[in-house]
Image (cartoon, rainbow, N blue to C red):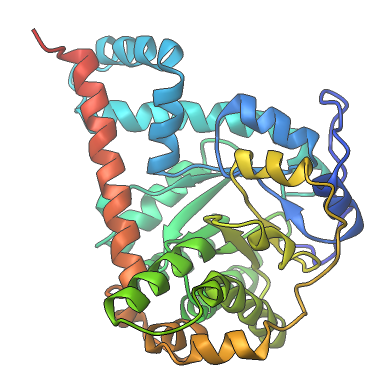
Length: 370
């Protein structure tokens, strides 16, 4: 796995570059842009902004399928005929595979240009497998083998930490997900490092692997706001917009100090600072396409800010909230405590609901209401 910072220029002449802050950022800093959607039309436009990656999860997949019913509902009907004994879930996940592979193909030029460090499409393991490290690692390996540029999402839970190390050892490039805090990022970054070292000790190649550790910065903001309201805290509500930013900056610092090779990835946007305040690091930022359009039309002047500390008065507010302290300090939670952290529970439940929604959509195609 290379440690250099390749030029993030758009990787193919197939797409006309669209000048603006996004392209300026990927050209002038080591920060990579990925698209937080596997929709092929959005991804093509993101590539024109300098995007070199994309992501999918149960919620994103359901949204993409729902937005393109003219394409996917007929395909679901075909799959039901091709797979007569398949469950609704098996048919739905086959659609997710096909959607993901379409997006992965668009990213192959970037994958070749960046030697596997970018140009990857993230597929997420089934959240219904979250209780079994073996099942998660097995599915991660299966997804990784679907295309050379697949990266696989595994949740930052106590079980997930074990699966992340094992999948990395098997040669899977992992994208840690359901992750909101510095302790989750450090624990999973170290699990990836253990997996890489096990491979290296056996003479196995890691040069084209491209692991990342996601912090869902906006979902941490969401949780801290819920806690502040629940506990009737008297504070500046604007300060709560900085919780995810502060945790991400601390994560980037910890990764450098510990020599972890995985890159931190910022996702779950809630405001433009989730892009502007993190620029300049050897990281990935993955906004939804609508945010990319807003940013690129803004005229913002790119300024590296990853090493600029969050203002002291904001940090004083945040450090007065115990659930933020747990998320900010590297030893703020044990892996067992990851599982019950509010943002973790809310997000896993949301992904499980998206799975159920996809099952329902498949059911309406193969067993329509009379």
